[in-house]
Length: 447
Image (cartoon, rainbow, N blue to C red; front, side, top):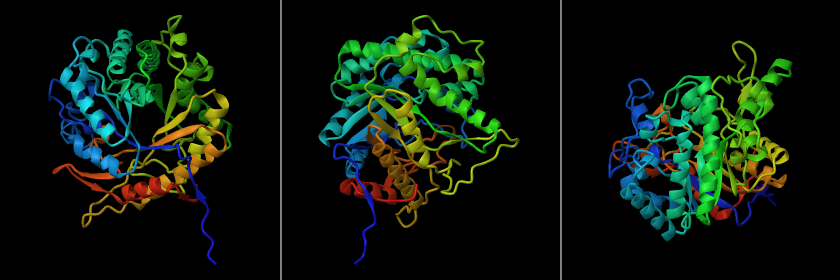
């Protein structure tokens, strides 16, 4: 008699979803009163985007949201995570609100409710209104105050219609890629500025939490952080020290202020503090209760002090972004966080893989993506078995989309997008994910 393979199941209350962000899918860049964001400015600057593209049209979700909600519903998910374009609802980032922009998100929420899909909103997914950038952007402390005003307005209008509101998505990226090495908008290369920006992002989170709490909206409030483990390439003291510093600079730099009310000493010792200004009450403002923590995980950091640095073997391969597939890191990360901090419920708000997908005879066979997700869900289940309170998983992303400075060259979607025709086609991974959610059984795989 054949023996069935072992399976892993998730709680019946577990939330399954997909995720997107405004600039990456909406398009309609100058429609219905939307103001420009720093990503509009950045993408229209020659040489910034690898394929020379912009998000002016992207997936045209602004005009195709009804069709896209139907696709979301077809996947059997019960949650959808998306961001609001700040400059669509407040063109300058301060001053007058744009009712046409709010109306778009209201219509989207109506459609999601009709399909019994819970909405999880992110306030800031990197697209600062250019009007605020013109006043100094995230280097200007006043931007934190404007952000709190914006957060309160969204909570007032939508806080009773959405399941959760996250203040920021991946502030590490905003600070380090936007201000540290100029890969992302606004394109500043100044490590000292990146440190101050990271503090202002955390401060704006705290001020926004206070402002939204005052509104009294029932939505759960939190933040989304991109995180990873840091593995020393060898047992050498230099590699081990580099790994500890990497973890302190990335994960602990944001977690410690939020959950411990201080910055990690190891990171402070190695940072350019020329611009680093923290007011007396700032850390108290940052360190206040949150209802959930969003964790975005894609790969680990591999720390090598050698020149050139040693590369990971990547026994499970690499994504089209060049990122190592390392699901064990998700287990290790979550268990480590659970041991170090007193945490609220966790949602895996992003996890996914870029694959060089090809549409052949109307189909996309992306088995590598299926393998990636299977292994990471197994790793997630193991972390939950070890006591970590994880309540949901969002695949990144629903659609192929504008992948920041890579333009349209990288595809993360469960759904293939032909950018010339805007035709959407479900990939093999979409069919797999739909079936998995329906059965809630994950055949055990090597992680």
